[in-house]
Image (cartoon, rainbow, N blue to C red; front, side, top):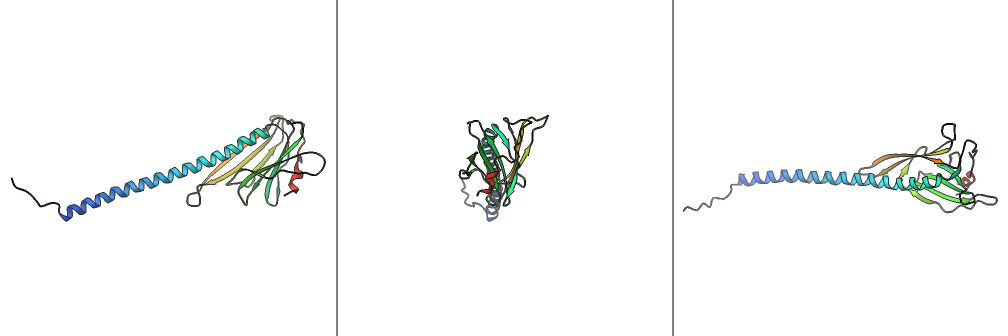
Amino acid sequence: MKSDDSGYTLAEAVVTMVITLVFMGISTTSIISLYSSTNKAQAIADGQQTIGIAFGRLDRQIRYASGLSTPGLVNGEPYVEFVTTYTGTPVCTELRLRPSTGQLQQRTWTQGPGTVKPTAWTQLTSDVSSVTPFAVNTATATFTFQRLGVQLTTTTGGAASPVTRQFSAIFTALNTSLNTQSTTVCAEGRALP
């Protein structure tokens, strides 16, 4: 029996290393791409979830509104108000979008004579923007209730790979009618910081 101690040549070793590096490059690129798309999908899901929670909360509140105000701007911030009376006492709720912080916020106060004493602003959602976030549709023969349209744009994912999505919903105030005249209802809160 003859033993062969010749081994591998340098050319064979270089070819093997080049092939291995090519496969490693392909697999690393695939893993990075997968990681990036997973992050993007997670950012979209997070944005949808926070907007969904805010819209669900607004739906429960606005559904029982007995009047909606006309949207307006105060210091460049869009506002809209609605009043609910299902507790026996008229309660005003004010919504605002703060373009400087990207927050949709709300506060409430009891409507009646005397000084308006609103609660502190609470955040409904963040990382949102909109040129005209609120639109009130008055009751008509076709739609016999007032409706509040809310349109928001959310940007998630950070500066490296931002993901922008548009969300819009129309909330119906079921305690309104064709006779509801409430264009200035609760708008007194706009004068308070």
